[in-house]
Image (cartoon, rainbow, N blue to C red; front, side, top):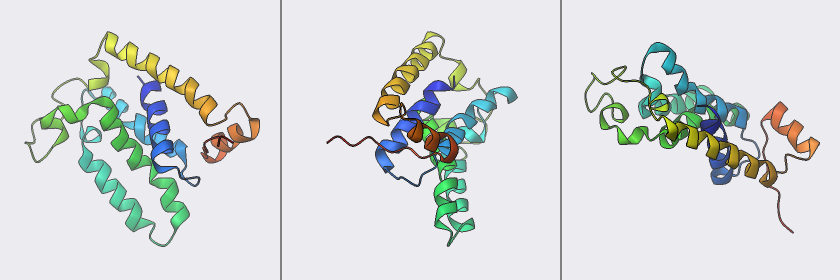
Length: 161
């Protein structure tokens, strides 16, 4: 289940932040990173907001004075936090509020992405539909815009006249 997270995170971040300097490839990385926890048996720290917030602070402090570096790497924690929203992790109090709601919840269940059955198929289908809409909305039929996205992560809305 990657399409839903990758596409929905890109579209959400692009429409909310509307930043021409944001590297959306890093947003995708952050949005799909928590799915990797399925390989280790359950939702761990990537499914909690505390890691996203700490990483956000780390990027801001670690790249202080280097705005372009900050803009690029901010995509990872923003994508991770977007994943929590898109995944519905916020509905699991023990996991979402770890460690404040207790410490025994990490890794205790399968990751939410793989426990949805047909709901996961529906979300992936919605991700494909949203991707088709975004392809047109951001003008990715234009080879110049598509290259800017693939090489630099740039994504600008097509302005209507």
